[in-house]
Length: 74
Image (tube, rainbow, N blue to C red; front, side, top):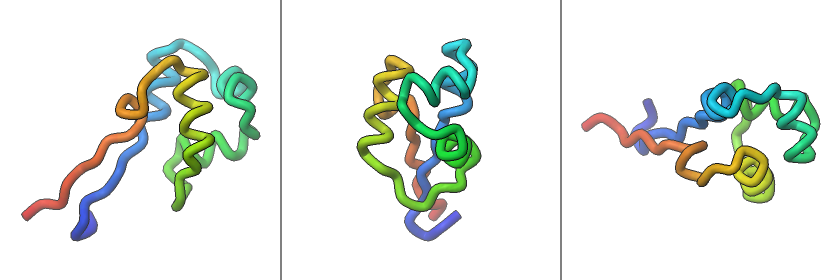
């Protein structure tokens, strides 16, 4: 873990909780499937606020449902 902590995305958990497929979510959020997979697999370095807004709208959730900050261990 980095000295500043890390941010974890719980997108896969939200997809399962909502009972939708990645294909459905990519359509609802107007994202390419590859781009959505990158978010699901943690392969992104910089988060786009617009995409977060689209995901929250499509999943009917708050940003805190998608992202979690894990502080560094002292």
